[in-house]
Length: 107
Image (cartoon, rainbow, N blue to C red):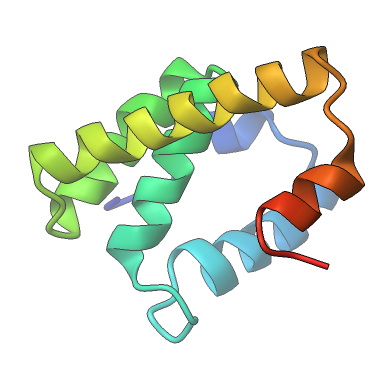
């Protein structure tokens, strides 16, 4: 980033160490189970559902820097929409969860 973004100054000082530790350990680390591109695509998909314009912009930039193609970005957002769509149907129609699991190959 090249510096500390101004929004960080708006956070309570007591919360800064924990917030930075979390971002550094999960989002910025390349020593986690997920590679940076995948983490950015997941974050973008969630941001599209929240919705958070700040996150959408930032996560798109991060995904591109991590090597994501436009097609991968589009697919991540489409997957978020698909998940939201089916969640609306399952929950709104009160589909029985045990029956659902059984029919989908679970126990």
